[in-house]
Amino acid sequence: MRKRLTSDARRDKIIEAAREVFVKNGLAGARTRDLAEAAGVNEALLYRHFRSKEELFEAAVVSPLEEATAWLAQALPRVKDASFSDETVHELTRQHMLNTVRAMDVIAPLLGVMLFSDEVTASAFYKERVAPHLAELKRIMEAQLPLWQHRDYDTEMVIQSAFGAAWFRALNARFTGRPLDFEAEADQLTTLILDGLTSREQ
Image (cartoon, rainbow, N blue to C red; front, side, top):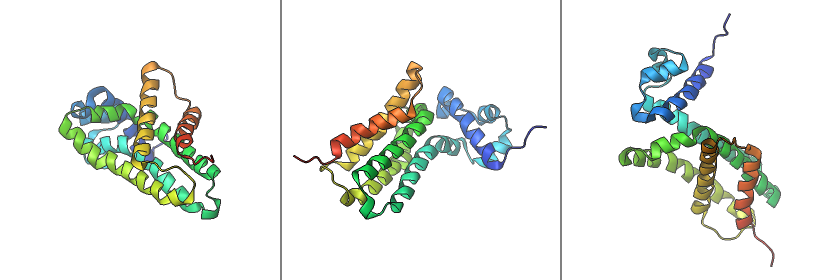
């Protein structure tokens, strides 16, 4: 007897199946019938979880990024000022980059589908979904700046650079057929970021 999926498990299955349909057909070309069929459900059940294919697309793309940011926002309040050492900064940065790389491994091609579609749609998606994510990261990072020793730097540029590097590395892995080593990627990206930011004694 087949085990009945919970509502959350069914929703996750729909999102996972939809990603492949969106990558293949784009947002405009993906039909709800195709999305439902890929997930093994009917359209009525699809609409019970998502009001539109646009809402499903946003869940498929944005949710992993929001989860990575939410982890960082929740982790930082647990760190006391006195324990905010270089080691703490390194570990928090590394874990966030690990979460980001894992998210990008799933959504990198979907970001491309959206951001390189027609300019009006792409601009709206970026402003409404990607930019707020980056702004929240900037807010989180700037709140911690007084707690550790660092060089002066452009917070926005660092965040955009880390985001772009994780995205490109995921795309490179996909197009070359070489799977990402998430731990190694997180280590390398953390080193690239922090070696440029950490204060060094002369």
